[in-house]
Every structure is written in C-alpha cells, then in structure tokens.
Length: 239
Picture 1 (tube, rainbow, N blue to C red):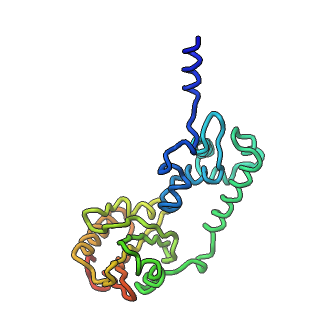
Picture 2 (cartoon, helix red, strand yellow):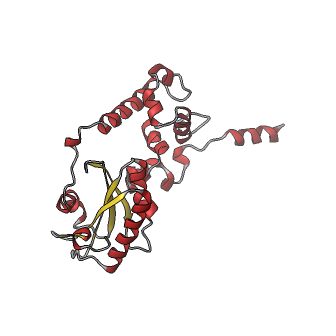
Picture 3 (tube, one colour):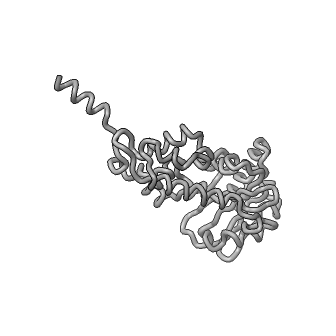
C-alpha cells in the first residue's frame, strides 16, 4: 500500500518553472536571447506567472493555446469564460486580455507609423546604430509587407555568418510565419570595413535561390561597417 501511494505521488508531480534548469526558464531565456526566440506558450507563461498543482505555467499556457486554437481564439474568448478555466481567474485573465489587445493594436497600426524601405540607405539608417559597433557578427532579417513597410525585424544568427552556417529555413521563417512576400537581410562586419567577402556573396546567392523557391523575394543584402555600408544588390553581387 505504501509503495502504491508513493508511485501515485510521483506520477502526479509536476516540476514548477522554478525547478527547471535556468537555461530552460522562459524569463531567463528572454533576457539572454530576446523575446523573439521564445515559443508562444513560453511568452504566455511569463504573463501568467504561475500554474496549478496539476500543471506548471508552461503546461497551462500550452493547454490554453491548444483549447482556444491559438492567440486569435484567446483574443476572441469571453472574459468570464476564460476566468472559469482551471488555473486562470480574474487577475490572469485581465493580464492576458490586456497583452493580447496591445498586440492587436500593434498589428493594425497605420502603415505610415512603421518604417518604409525605399532604398538600401533606408535599411542602413534603420539598423546602423545598433549594428555598427557590435563585437561579433549579427545577421538580421527585416520582413516587409507588399508596400515595403517594415512588419518585423529579427536576429537570426549571431557569431559567424557565412554560407556554411546560415540555413535558409531559419532566415525565411519569420517571413513565412507572417505571410510577408519580401525580406532584406543585413549583417555587420566588426572590423568596420563593410566590403562584402566571398562568403557574403555565396550566402546571398544561397538565400536568393531559396527565396525564389518560397516565392519570398530577397530584396537586398546590406553589410554594415562603421559609418559605412554596402548593398550587394547595388553592386550586383549574388543577385
């Protein structure tokens, strides 16, 4: 009888987020790698903070996304209905509804309020201050709508940026998930000299061909140095 009770207790036990290794906790991962690297359930978990005795907060967030078929379903869900979900209540529902409404308002912002990319110089101006003096290479993807307004910016690689490391699937993933039909890729040269390397050209060719297959146009690849930048498209390198 004692053994059966112990087995039952172990089966019912759910590790809390605090008991997870620090590198797996959503807050620590957000601080270290940025919010864009977290899964939706992990972002919700940060908002909701705690779970229940039966499930930790990540499991609770995953259940909500599954039962309501994503963020859109949670946005549309009735307030009282969400309050009644096990593990929620008024405080958590209020936090969730407020965050979802902020996201909704951001998504319907007038295009004029977002940067518009009309030239390579617009890209350079957008990222120069952040990239020019980084101690290591960083590759970013800028996703654009049909009128070339910026929809999303995301760091895809940090460290070595070359054709043997860069995977097209990772570069185009932000655009695919947001239904964007064009992107601009930009990375920095910590040396300060933005002259494209042979690897930069090979990476551009690789991404351009992948974009053709995905029907997502690679509009340009910008290399940023200190106070200078180069457009591979303008130079006909890789395009």
